[in-house]
Image 1 (cartoon, rainbow, N blue to C red):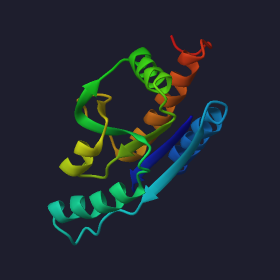
Image 2: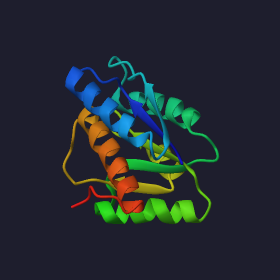
Image 3: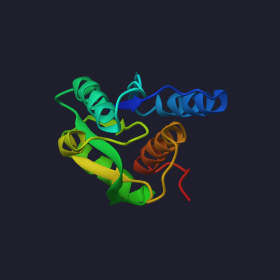
Image 4: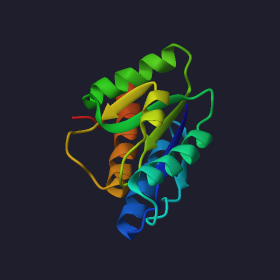
Length: 154
C-alpha cells in the first residue's frame, strides 16, 4: 500500500513534527508513506485567489492512479473501524495507492473536492491543519492495525 499526504503548509512546532515523525515511522511496517507539503498561498491574495492557487498545485501533485480522500468538514463521518473497513475494501478491489488531501486555512476548493473519491470528515469541529496532520496519520496507523487484527484499537 502507498499513501501520500498532500498538505498545505509546513509543520512549524517541534512537538507536531515529532508526533508526525513517530506515526510515519510506525506506518512504515504497513505502507510506503510520503508527505508533500505545498507552500501556502500569499496572504496578499484574496481568499478566493488563495484557494485557487493552492488548488492548482494540489491537483498537480495527485497521481492519476490514486484513490483520493479529501479531508473536509462537510464530508462523511466514519468511526475508526469504518475507516479501516473502507481502506480494506478499496484494497480488496485492487486499489493500493491512496492520496489524502489536507487544505490550508480556507479549506479545499470545490474542484479539489469534486476530484476526490471520498470526502471525509473527522468532526464538525475545526482543527488547525498542523494538528490535523498528526490526527490523520494516527488514524491511518490505527486503520492498518485494525485491518491486520493487531492490538491497538480500543
